[in-house]
Image 1 (cartoon, rainbow, N blue to C red):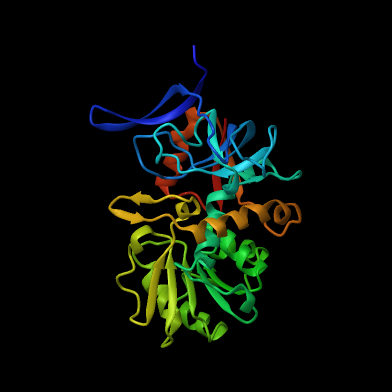
Image 2 (cartoon, rainbow, N blue to C red):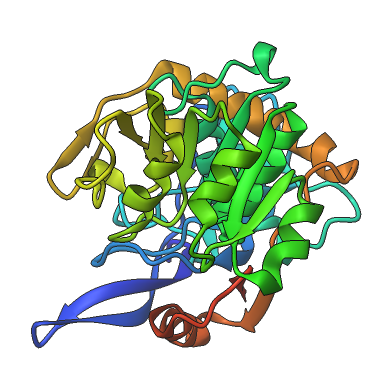
Length: 336
């Protein structure tokens, strides 16, 4: 009998999507890939009808052709689009990792916290530096301000750390109880998003502001944050694919969006949107994943705080917390 892996799948039964556990054949690594036995995986609200899970930490169990950055036995954190390929996802005992979109978890970093890094950090990195997003020039970081709208979100926390690590002046908004957290990540100016004068205060703190990353992407976040540009031409990147909810931004705002899956060297579809394979985004992402182990080891990048749930049986509980809107400044991690 062929070896199998316990997986969490979304199936449609009686017209309704349901989470079920099934056993599927072990995935075989291709060129530049490794097979990984999962140890922990992050909850992400993604598509239905496939094996779920996007971030995970696990042990390399088999090498594909041409793998040089990883070795059998390595503990790695990796990004995968759970739900895109029917048989692959992080909510599975075994899955596949691309060696260029993975990093070795350094000693001293808790595995569950390491699993919070790949998707959120890669999203932040591409939003900041991809030519199709904010396209910030790292060689001219000194004195350049970046507004991170939603600093205490998972993506926001990594954006603050990566931008400040590269020398940019980070301005951000969050709730007062998360202010110390975002400051500890490197934010230079922190404002209460409920403050009626928050836009005026941002403009005063960063009078030359031209770059905004909206990590929230709700019906008002892009339109409100775009006002911080004042009369200047500027750029706003939204975390929402297809530039959703950006219809009301100011007329002097150039809008882009970030799709983390351009980290992989292949084309992608999301609903009716299409993104072609992007060599530069793949190169940028590979650079990030190569640098992450040292940055984590040196404490220059701090993983998100995590709440650990034990086993695939508790995945519905994690999704309910997301639906209830109770998650703040932490990620739900499943120990497998």
